[in-house]
Amino acid sequence: MRRTARILGRSPLTALLGYVRPHAGSLLAGAALMFLGGVVTLAQPLVVKHLLDALTTGTPYTRPMFLLGGLLLVSAVAGVCGMYLLECTAESVVLTVRRRLIAQLLRLRVRVLDDVEPGDLLSRVTGDTTQLRAATTSNVVDLVAGSIQLVGAVVLMARLDGVLLTVVVLVLLVLGAVLLALVPRIRDTSLRAQEEVGGMGAVLERALGALRTVKANGAEERQVAAVHALAGRAWQRGRQAAQWTSVAGIATGLAVQLAFLVVLGVGGARVAAGQLAVSSLIAFLLYLFYLTGPATQVVGSVTGLQAGLAAARRIEQLGQLPAEDLTRPAEGRAPDDGVPASVTFHAVSLRHHPGGPPILRDVDLRIPATGLTALVGPSGGGKTTLLALVERFYDPTRGRVEIDGRDVRDWPLAELRARIGYVEQDAPVLSGTLRDNLLLGTAGGVPEDWMAAVLERTRLASLVQRLPHGLDTVVGHRGAALSGGERQRVAVARAILRQPGLLLLDEPTSQLDAVNEQALRELVTALARTTTVLMVAHRLSTVIRADRIVLVEGGRIRAVGTHAQLLAGDVLYRRLATTQLLAEPLTVGVVDSRSMEQI
Image (cartoon, rainbow, N blue to C red):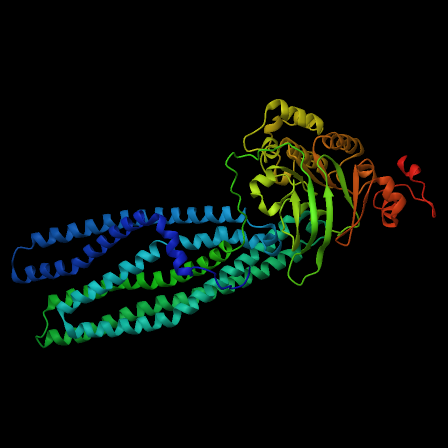
């Protein structure tokens, strides 16, 4: 993601205008008020000319004075109201884009998130959207209004004196040439600066996500140095953008000052020669001073738009990432919730990247409805990946996965996942209350008696009683208020509360003590009588009573059978039983399966 990728689809400018379109009404209203203020300001030098003529000729000057005061008042009120509308519109634009990006982020495919940095994605939602704030409203309005006001001022100046106008036009042409040369540099440096900020956020997010590991290894200074280095690069890019923006601003000021000096000299000579009235020269100079505002507006809006276009490019890149369709079925729930589901793998192979190493190879496996199926095998063999394929976190490179005889790719994702309860190995707990975490997968809530029953079966009832606010106790960031075993039991309870037809458990006993492990084994055994349970396990005590055990090695299914069958017929399983599955050492030679059953 940290690269300047070509945007598939609309250009950054089209995207920028697309963000504004839903708020066109308020934007036009604000622009109209700002334009009104500019037009009123544009009339002021002419009124000043009439006032000066009245003063020099001795005619009444009350009317032009009151008119000038009224113009000043109207200009101020229109400007304030217009700016307020534009600022409110800018906030609305940012809110709309952020909501769209957040929805996109949470729907991204898991494979995409495996390849990108979360910190960079967050930078696009926060920092890049902030860059849109001015670019989509005030910059656009300033560019249009400033250009119109420049043209209007030039037309009125032409009425006063054509010779002086020629001087001004030449200066404006030079300024335009300078801007054309600077715009690409401003755009490129702004984009690079935002990319560096995204990279800094990615490194910082990684460090904070593993803060205990960082501290335990005394690596704080190294991580600080890494983030500081990226912050320095972002600062350098920001300085480069500021440098070119400053050059544009200085060029504008110098152009106006140069025009003023030349007009003053040439105009003074024409006044002395009787070719130009003093009041006309003063009015012309006032218009020249007036040009400073619109010229600065145009230059500032052009430079600001470059940062906005760079932000739009990065936001559009995120919008092009593959996302899941989470449209729910018409009833809101799958019609067969709670009914045990069968799972079948037909010649399934998986590679995470084309040409990359195979993760799974030609997996054929049938898991009937109900019963406990345990997946065992050496680490890295593909056990967790099999669960991920069932949940459709990944799609097979070849072959198909079926639930109840239906390819998972043909299921609406919301309906598919409504059939499944899933417990990850690290059992994540979200910030919020314990109740929020338990009901995460049950949008409509659950009956209180079912909640109480699940809490009792997962041995969480005593925890709820102990917490100061019971189920409404805030558990902290990532469940910091809970122990590892408690977080694991919360994850199991959360899955059971959904009453799934298929329960996927990825090593659910890894952080449990012996008492709670025994209770969970009994719970899983009871659930398997009415639910299909597919569990990744590494302990003999967990799998010994499974209805079937699937031995996975090197991305292939090596053997399927009961504990006794595999113990008697597979050398790898016997080795695992004495090591990873934590059984007592076996004697070399013939293995007595009955002795293993007694462990």
